[in-house]
Image (cartoon, rainbow, N blue to C red; front, side):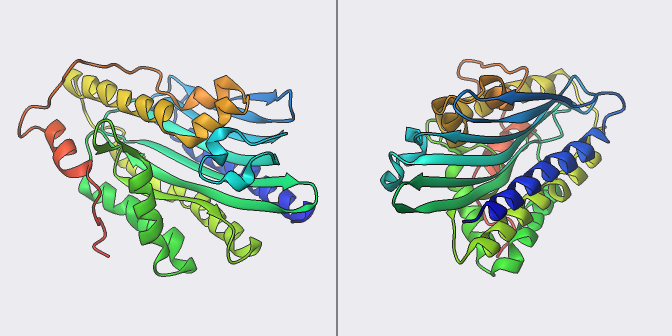
Length: 304
């Protein structure tokens, strides 16, 4: 693993952050991303960009980080004990969009690169990432578009890649205590270092580059849909599930907190407003019930 390879990854991630922010900001008449550069005491830092109180996005965060550490935290070594007691270098772009209109889905994306080092032993490196969609009032055509774009991101790398990483996403973004998926899925991959650096880096770039084509058309189609108090309250209730997943299960959130990362940047993924309601149940036959009955269950959307 050469310094040139690492520089290529970092340059790509910085450019990806720029491109995503530019595309999303273009949907807002007035609101802009505010950049906050930060440094980490143990090594490295990043730049967080957050847009708040927009007409389209109630809160949108796009974070770049490049950090170093003396040892990987438990969230990174729990399933890979061979990484324990290794120094690490990690970089990535992570983003979460919380739209104002309940008919526009929340979305998340992340692409990242890790190196774990130990004197006298070869470096261990890998890529990870993906993107997933969390609708409150889903439209089947939007779900199919999201998954078809995910499939296109994977297609150059093998006919089975989309199905494998789509299934991993369904399994990862699952709230066990609720027995439901966080949303309608997408892609999730981790520990990717085969067949070689060039191929895995190319795949990570393809996933990153397909996020805006997957999400922006849905935003543009649904952002002006009329809604009322019922839809807004349901959106806030379902946002509570997003909080539950991120704080209980999400490895990225846990890694950031356990590694002494910048708390404000880590928790920018949280919705600005959410609520919980004791033992709430949807009205049978309602659009809210359809979300639970149809869309929060893993399925083969593209019939592949």
